[in-house]
Length: 111
Image 1 (spheres, rainbow, N blue to C red):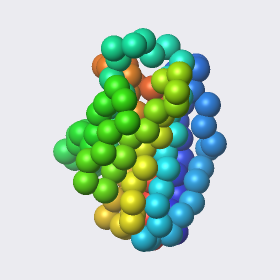
Image 2: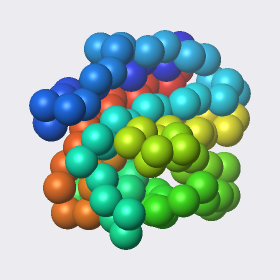
Image 3: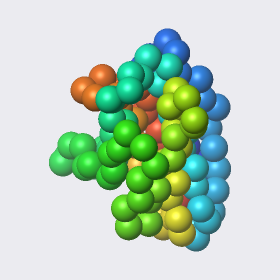
Image 4: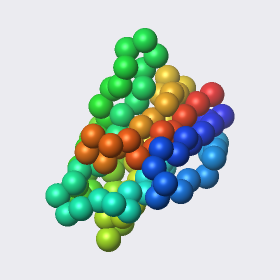
């Protein structure tokens, strides 16, 4: 089972406090960023214990990389990180950032 807990780091971010899924499922992590401007990128990171942040994907429009896809709403005020076929080793804290500003943090646990 996968559990995703969200810690809000920006007042304009709204997310459910937890999501669950199972190994092998496709996961969607939402990120609201109402202060985004036309040239801003969205960055997704995974926090690796004792190692720091690992960059997963970045983009200013819909982007795909490996088993991950970043999609944007038409007004670019929100986006989603899609992870296909999630595995237990992908458990962890996921971070969505607008440029160098943290937008939200997601905890993902896959069992």
